[in-house]
Image 1 (spheres, rainbow, N blue to C red):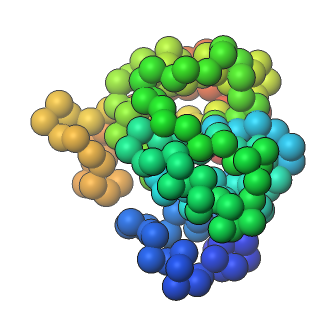
Image 2 (tube, rainbow, N blue to C red; image 1 turned 90 degrees about the vertical axis):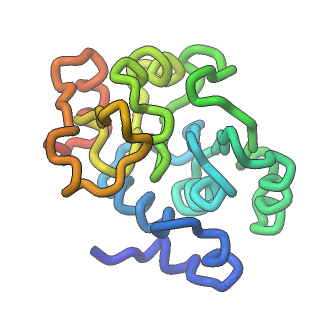
Image 3 (cartoon, rainbow, N blue to C red; image 1 turned 180 degrees about the vertical axis):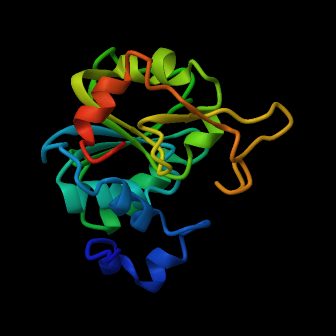
Length: 191
């Protein structure tokens, strides 16, 4: 796959902020074929230092809430300003993904890149803790690993997903859950 959007961010300043896989490439791959319109209000859940939030605002034209528990919102705000983005384009907030302070049905979409496995391990998380904040007809997009139609269930003694191949029995389809038709409408190419 080619990454025309994320290739623009291969600068030393941006690459120095990356902790693990390139999150903008993951985001670009995740959003291939999406139907989230420009101007939508999107939660970048687990946004870290804000790289994916910048990417979402610049490349897709979303109004982004950069939501993260461990990053300093003021530090992220300064980074967003340095990247030429205003407070109206990206709103940094300190948020616990299990206790979100937003109004119900606040977001047009939620995107979580390379972080969902930290807070979404509870099999009821998607339906009970995340989807209530997405507008009816909105676009949930939890995680890079096609979690739109699957959920990760990890053994209790593991705190994180190490690789897909090492967890073949941990994928649990949630196709029967009420949230799945909404996921499929956002990503028609998902099977």
